[in-house]
Amino acid sequence: MVHLTEEQRIRYARNIRIPGIGEVGQAKLRESRVAVVGLGGLGSPLCLYLAAAGIGTLGLIDADVVELSNLQRQVLHATSRIGKKKTESAAEVLQALNPEVNLVLVDRRVTAETAEGILENYDVVAEATDNFESKFLINDVCLRMKKPFATAGILGLSGQAQFVVPGKTPCLRCLFPQVPRGTPTTAELGVLGAVPGILGSLEALEIIRWVVGLWQPREDGSGRLHGVDGVSMSLRTLTVRRRPDCGCAAIR
Amino acid sequence: MKITLNGEMRDVGDGTTVAGLLKDLGFQTEGVVVEINGTIIDRTRFEDTKFSEGDRVELVRFVGGG
Picture 1: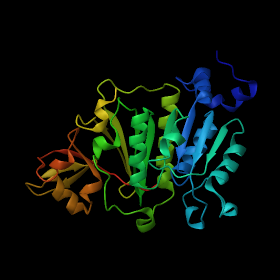
Picture 2: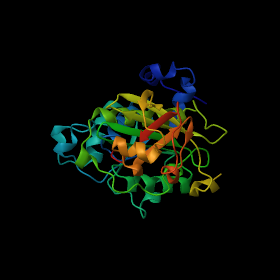
Picture 3: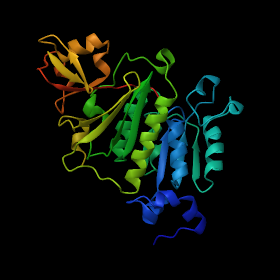
Picture 4: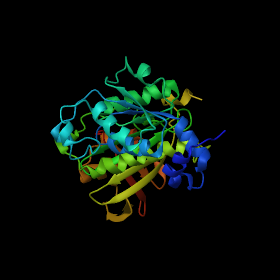
């Protein structure tokens, strides 16, 4: 039974008007639990748009503190909060944006040992970490726990994003069986803030359309890889397929 | 010969392989996804996959920052 308060009907009026969302979709958002791993460049727009859209519970997961050099891209944080935990800095903004969202602050690193415990209470995971090792760790853990997840990466003026439904669409290892090695980091090659702005927003959109049921994985097991290249200013979408010898192939 | 690379025409020499093109572009083969005419090319085949005239090539760099 869908029941939204009068205030919710006003707050979410523009969501509710979208064909395929409506009050039913809005109620699904309110009932959903999304974990955001990484409150940096990608995590900033992700958290803002998920909280604004009315996600019921948002897990804010990051063990770092806000630094001056973060602020040209991590727009969730602020100069006045340098030195503060990113979880607390994020919560301050998100609470003010939408007091209805239940925020769970997790000031811990996601590792092979901690990942399952941290992620077990969530329906969907938003991967927004800053290194390949963590991205592939979250890929593997989400596959094991059968949790759908959005994942993305950024560097310089380019980035990519993908949404993975375990057993239904290709995972990161369908494309890269091994974690790519020797690739430069944003600390070395830089990154322009608008790039994670686009890719983090893409992740938020992927999650919202999944939660409200606007989209179902295709029967043929294909998925999409979105690429943004800010040098040539091109946006490309590739159809990717599950690799029959990938570890994820056994998941149903 | 001409191929279309991410929507733009590009001249490549006859016999150019995927690995050769990535090298010309200055990309590390480690972190690129390549699609030719709608099919993703397995990374173990980059060295021996040659382009043909008119191929539609899509290339997405796979990066790890956040």
